[in-house]
Length: 227
Image (tube, rainbow, N blue to C red; front, top):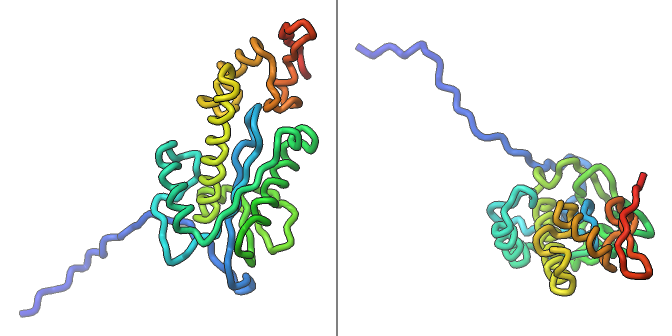
């Protein structure tokens, strides 16, 4: 006698949801580049942007927003991206450009330079955030894109590692500020160094904590109230 089929429902199988950048019917076919930046918030050093076109046939495991990765993981992924991506490029805006243009426009400039530096021309550029640089190619801003789109994740890693290396080099020239440790961000140690030594040529003069300190003709550091 055949056994009766169980009337109990099948167990529900779940799997982790992943966000995939879907191409719509009107999206162009061809190479897509991801773009992100590092260094908008620090008090010193340039702002650095990267543009990356990944190779779909050469998977890179572990790509994620650079901010959630350890320094060791970023270095490992940096090497993997450089090895396996179809191409990538870095652009930067200097401290002088940041002081002249403001940090937003300097960031857009660095992003544009990164895209223009690509060896291959993309048909579309995906940019982390809600603003777009002026480009001569179709582009789209994606809020939280560094956690959603692999090419933007890769760009965030390239930009972050590149800038961190720059700040370690600055530390060799100006060890009194501790750039190797805080990478130019406004940590208590950095702020104390500013009060003690005043700003150096690599500090962003119009950022509040930097503008609040200056060195007099006799070499004394003076703190002033800003705002």
